[in-house]
Length: 83
Image 1 (cartoon, rainbow, N blue to C red):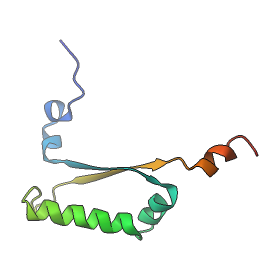
Image 2 (image 1 turned 90 degrees about the vertical axis):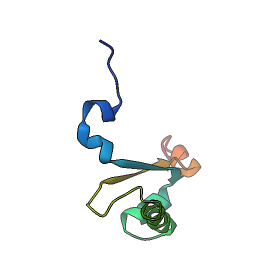
Image 3 (image 1 turned 90 degrees about the horizontal axis):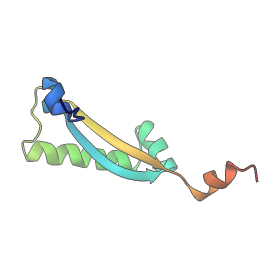
Image 4 (image 1 turned 180 degrees about the horizontal axis):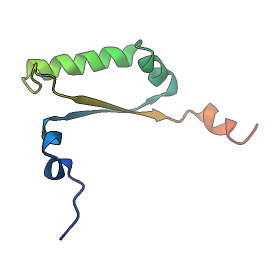
C-alpha cells in the first residue's frame, strides 16, 4: 500500500484546515509579524478578509494556518563565518 503525505486522506479534521503560504520574507518582517506589527500582519488580515468574502472560511472557528519562511539575509549569512 503506498504511503501518502496528503493530510486530507489521513485525518478527516484536516479537510477543514486552510493553509496560506506567504512565501519567504526578510527576518525583520517576520520579527515584526511575531510582535503583531508591520506589513506582514496587514497582509495576513487582508488574506483573512478575502477568505471571508469568498466564503472559503466559516464563522465556526475553522483553523487557518499562515506559513512564512524567514529569508536569510546576506549579512546573517556572512555572520556565520565569523567575519
